[in-house]
Length: 224
Ligand code: DC
Image 1 (tube, helix red, strand yellow):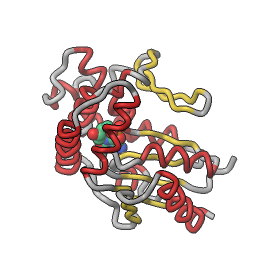
Image 2 (tube, protein in one colour; image 1 turned 60 degrees about the horizontal axis):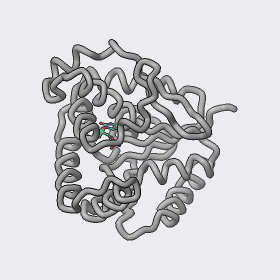
Image 3 (cartoon, helix red, strand yellow; image 1 turned 120 degrees about the vertical axis):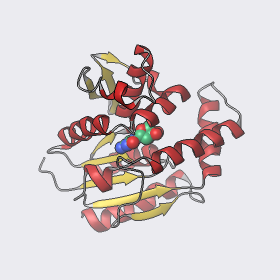
């Protein structure tokens, strides 16, 4: 199929990016790429190797030494480190913190951005992350900055963790979200921020269906 559009969805952790992006990709018959999964896979690999994720030089030394790959099985994205499927293993709170730390290392970002652009080539794509509209797809057809209050995001994350059978106290989840927001938006390399031409959508008071409908309306207006 000829490529006709790309949609960039950026925003802080827990704003609903991946759930909304997935639903939108299905509705528009586009490829969905969760770029955070790549930083998570890299972070997981560092944890397993015993590398200090806050030591930028030590982390940078591992760039290019492992093969991070993405595949789609039954419409769902799977992520691999050197052919091992780590899709489930990257979702723990430890890996979230490690991903945030390694994503601040410029060499890691350069490798991931190149991989993301390669995967998206030739496809109608919806990508979510922190730097999609600002760095990865600067010419995206539509750029959305998806956000919600930290309290609402912590509440959603708590419910998700509970459903997975791994509940965490609300105060802890809120603290972790605030820490990650701060780190993601204060790093030197591609900090989290809305692209100048992004449309901001605050989902604090929107249900999932309402959020998807809001983005779908934007996509129909811009992507034809
Ligand atoms: O979206 P997520 O929570 O799975 O992302 C994990 C971490 O990776 C997050 O703390 C920030 C980082 N990230 C990034 O820096 N750039 C992206 N495009 C996606 C994620």
